[in-house]
Image (cartoon, rainbow, N blue to C red; front, side, top):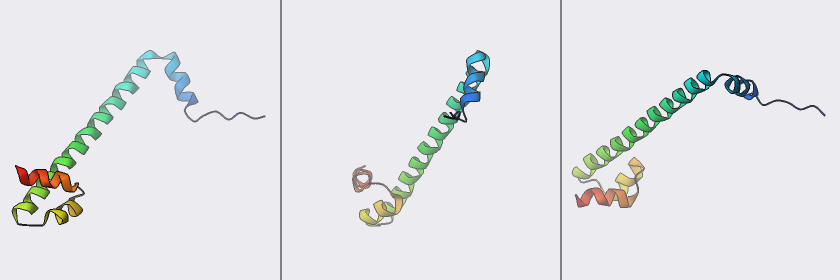
Length: 81
C-alpha cells in the first residue's frame, strides 16, 4: 500500500525542527487574520452607513435590508436612534 504524504508534511517537518521559522509563520498568520478582521469590520460599518443614508432619504426599511444585506431588525434599530 502506498501512503501519500500531505502537501503540508514537508512544512510541518521544517517547523518541527526550527522554532524560529514556526514562530515567524505563526506571527504572519496572526497578522493576516487581523487584517481580514479589520476589512470585515470596515465593510460592516460601510453597510450601516449606506443603510442610514438610504433611511434618511425615506427608503423603505425592507428595501434597505434587502439592498445592504442587513437584517430587518438591524435596519429597524438604525431608525430607533
